[in-house]
Image (cartoon, rainbow, N blue to C red; front, side, top):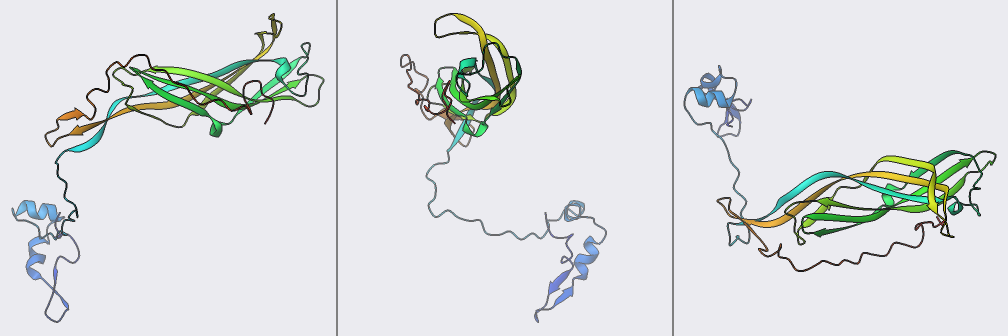
Length: 254
């Protein structure tokens, strides 16, 4: 774009430093709406001023660039759940088996979610846990029974073409739904199955993106930084960080 349409376009600075009207430019462009139309109608070039191009102190020695190629991106759900026996709630010895449960409130802590992401051939594997506080109101008892613990989750997502050396990026996990159901069978310490448990489930959502660094030349040709990244190197074996003891499964601590 030029400067025919600006309010300075019809003025020039004289030798004394004062501005005076340029009648030639005024008549030339007075019937035009913009510099673009002005230049288009009379086939002229607008009088544009360009700033000098900033030069690099250290010129690049290659006309190729390193970019991230997206192998895949998809929104997925993860489900954290566990069935807790009534004896896990405080105050001890827990909720009486004969008690009538009026309500169950589950409060997750999204800021405390821990998840470990690993990439194997064609799959993204995610293992973690969600800190929650469960509050159970029982008929005839004034104060609710509580439990502060963590719900485990583990999911694998298919990503055809993904390789172990690719990079995985996940958006922060968002809680989509919370579910609880009393009266679920659990295995007691004696090995007997009893209907004294509460199932708690938290549905999470995130977007997983797998990327790969590649080299692109000026003609759009692309080559992988590591041509052997997808070679089969045997069965991968990962040891993930230990789950913290405080607030772990069935843990009553805060």
